[in-house]
Length: 238
Length: 333
Image (cartoon, rainbow over all chains, first blue to last red; front, side, top):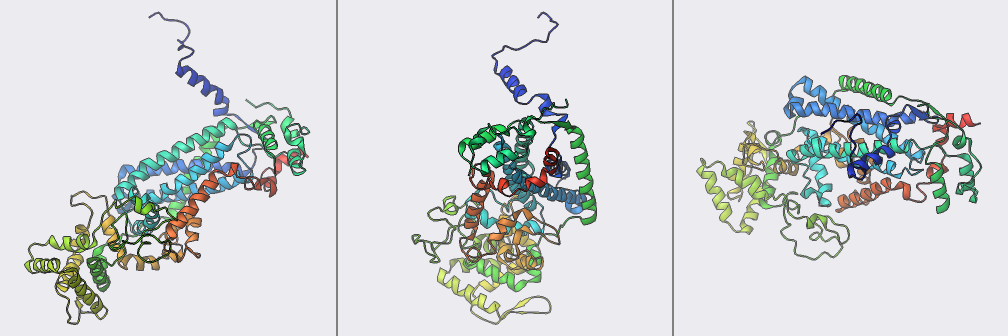
């Protein structure tokens, strides 16, 4: 095989080539790891997404250590109980930040401008995180687990889920909690983040557009008077 | 209300930001956020710890509430406890021969359903429990060295169902007049209890020694991960509920969204738990499936907000966005 000074390139029509080109088109490095942010992104509300993500990182880190050491460790040792406490509080923070993040996204109508999938993946993350937490509560092997599993079973059984999602089966719940549901949460969060990077943070409502809609004017068809926010020249500070 | 054309035009306008940018370091932001959260979590764990109350055992229950234990065991034997008549996924209701009339008649409503949708029944008996066998007879059969006990079990099993029921009914009634001796034994007035008194007396002794905790586990193997039977047996008695009431965990105390101690618990379940606090769900025999159906619809609604007319327009009608983007709007004026 002869050496060349240029890196070899795969055939242009190969699916790997098309996949890479599509990826670079949708998510170029300046979008994936940007060094500029639209000027309107200057509110505390924008911190909640990264705080939710950071809480998830701490949940996974503490959960990994709990999984490495095994169930007896968090009951019988002070250090194990401490890591169990950190895991619990990271979960509480995760839900708190995620819910406020969802509210912030709602009040800014963050699905505008082709961002519906960003909202939907965020909402699905919240919904998947609920059984993820529930399986954690029933995997603790303490009185809370006993009470929560025997109470919550009726809801599961009433819709038939109890036949294959048995809250009183520790082995099954632990598997759901440390593997299946976290995989789903991390997967959907990953998609959510890529969509956020691709579409960017939703711009503010434009006053002229709001006024046109309120007046029922046809100007809202995109030919409305120029908005300073949209048409102010500016370059990304890359 | 916006027209479809207006909405499409608006969508296009908000697709890309063409205004000014400010410097931003995403890696720096992520690093700072993770550090702050990690510190916050450590501080919360140091100051507030976490609840970890030991699980209730059958041994504890039999020692502290022996009469309730015997009442429950008698109910398991004659098939009258909650587990015995639960229906799928644990068993089939033995007397369910009627057709569902839609009205509550006590027989065809033993499984929850929504109109014609009987998911609970359709998924079948996935975790079979025979309360008499699993909670009483089989554990007692693990003691072959006690011939009197084994003879009592033989006599009970050989008797007709009507006779068995007469014994357990008499025994259960007598338990209302039971007295605890100084040694903790349960003393009953004499009556026609047949072999039931011998059987359940031995079961109580076995439970107090800790043997029953192991004998009612799901698998007879050394390794165990499924505690369905043990938890269902415990839940039929008062041991869990009494402690739960003391810990503000009952259903009418916002139930399982709380946890022991003064911890926040699963507060994100507030809306789910809320429905159980109000009529008709607080008194309905179909409450679980009704609440699950409501929450499924609401969850779908949450995901699909961008497509729901009216709901998706709330943010522009109630202008909280002016607070969020106040710096931006100020810069425009």
